[in-house]
Structure formats: structure tokens, C-alpha cells
Image 1 (cartoon, one colour):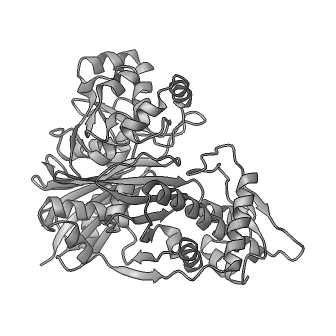
Image 2: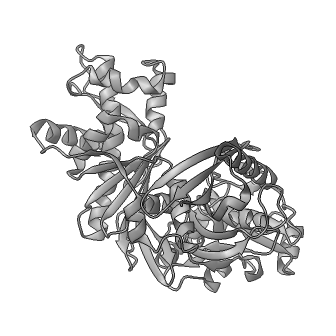
Image 3: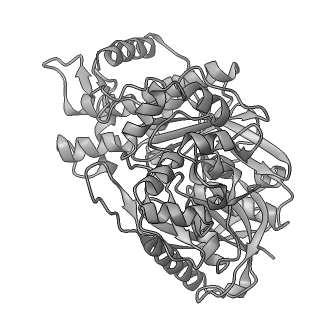
Amino acid sequence: MAKMVLAIDQGTTGSTVLAVAIDGTATRVVARGYAELPQHFPQPGWVEHDLGEIWTATATAITQALTKAGIHGRDIACVGITNQRETTGLWDASGRPCGRAIVWQDRRTADRCAELKRQGHEEQVRARTGLLIDPYFSGTKLAWMLEHDAGLAARAAKGELRFGTMDSWLIWKLTDGAEHVTDVTNASRTLLFDIHTRAFADDLLTLLGGIPRSLLPRVVASAGQVGVTRGLDVLPDGIPITGIAGDQHAALFGQACFDVGMAKCTYGTGAFALVNIGDKPIVSSRGLLTTIAWQIGDRVTYALEGSVFIAGAAVQWLRDGLQLIDSSAEVEALAAQAPDNGGVTVVPALSGLGAPHWRPEARGIMTGLTRGTTKAHIARATLEGIALQVYDLLGAMRGDAKRPISVLRVDGGAAANDLLMQFQADLLGVPLHRPTVLDTTALGAAYLAAIGAGLLAGPTDVTRVWAIDKTYEPRPHDAALATTISNWQAAVAKA
């Protein structure tokens, strides 16, 4: 009989909970719950979440999933958690939030990051953490909280407060304050964690203003029991919590990318790509991040990561800005009306260019327009611009890893666009796999929890229960594709 795993995916705009049946030969999503999360923007560039609202949304989604599945909490074998990474919260020993959490998108620490770079600390930080010094990550957010509230700093120094990313907060709530933990994937996104020793580093804590060690959670593997539910209205006591990973790490695991050279790309508003690089970290020379992909037992797997700022958002721009389409779903049919891009190149740098270019000042451009250009050409070139950004990104990954990428597994809303996915396969020259279950982030949390609870033996078992919906085989490069790539490179230089 299939065992039921509850997978919690606490995201930026809401919490999703899946009830997943895993029986060793197949995976089946039995039910899905979702609750939206309010966003708070107190100043330009500031983005905040309320920790209480995060818990309320998560509890609501749990109740929805159980109700839709027609099951009781006692039918759940274990719980897995995945979460928006880098979002930073503080709470006290009673579980009372100390103000709002600072969200990963927040840029309030940009000046502090620039100062650390000017002081020459970036190479030290990068070598230890695999990260760039950037407001994106948790460390400077936590330092800002303490620097801007003397009362909080005093309480932190006395050991009265707890810091955590949203996995830590949810586990605290699920265990009624019994456990203050994080896993290695979330810890590796803090700027405070040495990815080689897999421990918080005293010199990094000092660098960011003397952050007290007492604030920090205990770091655990991504699979294994870390606590049990206690004192909840939505779940009975005693359900083991056995899997944790940050969202992009969980998606890589949920896509069963267990061999070195296997990669995944999530096509959402932006695009996030990670490639498995094995058991040794590689420091990127091409603007990528090095991160811990997951840890099972004592075995650690590392990944290279890069982000494209604009992917699905480019289609939204066609819809809302240019009004070429009425809904995002219409873009594929419009693009298919043109047999090719008609010489048009669109660089969708609407928010700058991410990895491997790292040009925040870049702006979107459109080149190659003639009187024969139609809206179909523009739609097609925009989809190609999304894929070409990912092409640049994976090219950097190949260069840093010094080995080919064997396969790209895709998920996210735009993964349903067959024209885009086929063009992506053609560009990269590798197969693209789209899975039957597109909730790969939550699925990764479910798989890790199943391993941690002993329902699955390990990655080999996950490979057996993971299933492909569609494979996009690459077609040989031809002169037209070579011209498209050349035009792209010229346009990016002008963006």
C-alpha cells in the first residue's frame, strides 16, 4: 500500500501542500492545497513577509490538502519541507516574531554589500560560501536587523532570539518550539556557512558585524528525522519531519538529477538552472554560484546555480506592455505563425542581465526589424530570447564544470510551451525531459522526506518512481540557428 507523504512548499507568494502517495514503483499526487501569502512593501526596494501570515497560509494549505485527499493526519507517514530561500526571520524563545521577515528580493542592504566589496572581502566570502556578496542572501539581512534595533541586538547577545530561513520557522512551529534547525542547502545560502566544512564560520559571523552564534539553527542533512509534530490544530502529534531543502535544491532532487552533468531549469517569472557537479565544490569563474545541492547521510552533492531575471515575465510584457496577446497561453500559437524569427532578435533584459553576464544596467532591446516584421516574429523572437539566456547560462556551467551537460530537465509554467522547449533543446544540443508531475519543488521535498523516513532507500528508488511526460530531442544545428546565435551575441553586447 502506498505511504502518504505531506510535502510543504512555502513559496514567496503562497504556501502549497501536496499529499503524495509513494509506493516504491510510482508517485501520485493525491491532493493539493494552496493559500496565498500577503506581500508587504514598506519602502521602495524593501520586501517583507509576516511570519505569522506564513504560518497561517501553511496551516490553511495543510488543511486543504488533507480535506481534498479525504485523509486524516494519522494517515501521513512523514512531512517534507521546501521553502523560499534566503528570506530571513527572527523570533524569540516563545515563538513570537521580532518584526517582519526580510524577503530574498529585498535590496535594503545593497550599500552594505557594496562596502564589503570595496573592502576587498568578496574573494574570501566566495571561496568559503560559494556565493557573491549580494543583498539576495540572508547574512546581511540578519546583520541589518540587529544593527537597526538596539533592543533586538541586546536580546540576541543574551541568547534570547532565534534566526532562521523559512524552513527553520516552519519546523519551529510544527514542533511547538522543540526544534531550531535548518538543512545544509538553506544554510549554504546565508553568507555565514562554509560549504567545505559544512559549518557556520566564526570569521564570517564577525565580518557581518559580530552575529551571535546563539541565534543560529542546528544544521542537519536534507534527509533524516529532525523532529515530530506537536501541539498543532492541523496535524496530530508524533508525525516525523524527515526532509528539508531550499526550493531550487528540492527541484533538482525532484527532477532526479542524481548524476554529475544532469541539470534542471525552472521556467517561471525568471529561470533558475542548477547542474549536479558531484561531491566536490567548484568555484565558478563565470559568475555562477556554488551551492550544496543536498546531503543524505554523510554524502554531500554540490551544484552550480545561475539565474535568468526575465523568462515568463517577457511573455507577460508581450501581453500587458505591447498587448500582442490577450493571455500568456496564446504566445505559442502566435509565435508558430512565423516559420522563423524573420531576422528579429529580442534581448528581454527588462530587469538587467543575470548570470553569466551580471549586467544590472542592461536594458531590453529588439533588433532586425523591417517592414516585413510581424507580431508573430516578435513573439517568436521573444521566446527565443528566453531560451538564449538559458543557453548562455548553461554554457557557463559547462565551462566551469569542464564537462558536458548530459540532459536538461524542465519545469515551471513555460515548460508547457512546446515551441520554446524544442528550441531550447536545439540550442543546447541535449535532450530536454519534462516530467509528469510539474510540482517538482514539492515533489523533491516529498522524496527527501520519504528517504529520511525509510520509505525509499535513496536516489536509486527516486529514479524508479520519477516519470517523464515528454522528451524534446535536439535537432542538428544548421545555418539558420547559427545566425540566430550570432545575432543574439551581437544584440546582448548592445543591451
